[in-house]
Image (tube, rainbow, N blue to C red; front, side, top):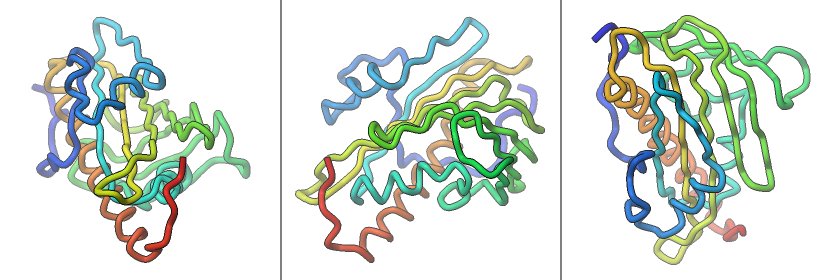
Length: 206
């Protein structure tokens, strides 16, 4: 294996709904439908792809406010130390330059905003440059309202496709990317749930 998998231990707080898994893996009943409708990847032979889910005890509008912050991913992503968006307007095609904290086999990443839909709650991002080994990395993250223990909650689904670097296997590549996403989703849940406690009267959004 050539220097792809590294850094700290991964949180196992987010569940995996892999591309080859049967719909039964989606225990809540809705995950598989959302994946089929909104998370469309067509990985080539030299790529790997996977989908992860996270249930968050916070209203969807709070979670989406964090997720859609293309200009401030460090609001919940623990491995991002700095982010600068190029240009004055945030729109499809906008580029951001991200600095990565130590502990990962990367230092910088240039990323393009591919999708931003405030109605469907979809954010799509593609890596287009930087000092890392995740070539042609593309991700989609969607958020969906749900009820958790009778209170407003959010289902978050994040999927990706990426080239498998030379010297690595598909399993190794997927494991590394999933580890980073799981840390991000765990942090997203912690930040969102803390905000929800500060706004206990937030309504369940549809």
